[in-house]
Length: 356
Ligand SMILES: [Mg+2]
Image 1: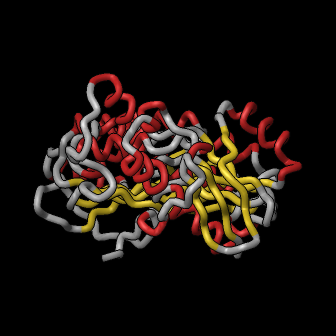
Image 2: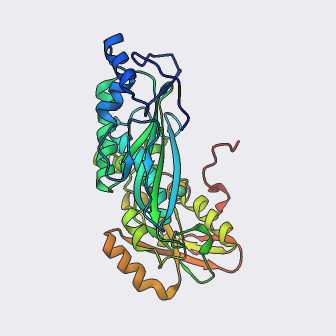
Image 3: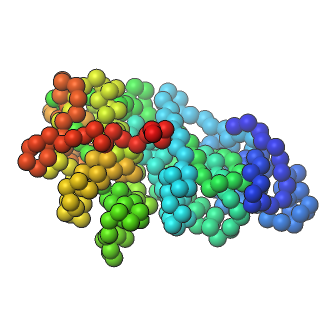
């Protein structure tokens, strides 16, 4: 990360000047404390974003984090940005936002079958609100401890609320799960359940009414996704391809089909759904389950003879999996409804930030 201009003093609303995070030299710290006596960027980093690390030679607090990969391992690296209003609503509690920002990144490591190691955080904040930042930090670092991944550096800036994380994980040479390995006759599997996050979003948008406990349950899917890291690890050497479901089942499956140069057939009735989603009117149900987004489940393929190993991986990781269809030699994606009639899938191409 390039060395940004140093700035003493507090983070100021409406001053989107670049501030550095990891360059907390003694001079800068002293300037922050003695020069202005105000709570500044480096204080914020020291207080909330400087956990101890056993994964890096040098963690937060110098110009660079210094990493020492285990000899002979491949590294899997992924970056995801979350922007207020685009990836999350302003109604999300900060503790949940901290969890989700790391969870969606861990989900990508899970999809590659990588063991989480370290991550960096670039945080843009519109104002200094210590209670809010503390809750964000707690949600993020609690999940980090759960999956044994260390925060080792990053950057803070004053500006519109956004979080960009880069996660790094390790995988034995050649064992990373990729999108490109699906073969004809492979079974298609999905972890967990689909559509609840989308149902919560449509409820927030006023498109559907879900009340009380049902809404709180759906909202947890949207705001507290559980990355399927353990399942991804257990599927190494078992799955022929994998992807995490961030943009909707059909859109993400289309990435696998394109990368693997194959087609697929699914049945609506086989897709794992909460009873709340299964009871929705057909069009809304299809919208949530097929087009959904924000599920952060794994979609993977495996040869039929691997089914016992798939079920063992599910058991070992404690994550339920469901066979939802089959890879076909013929290209294209066919989804059959409850009466075995093809569903018009053209509306569920997956989320594209730059689509009209
Ligand atoms: Mg992904």
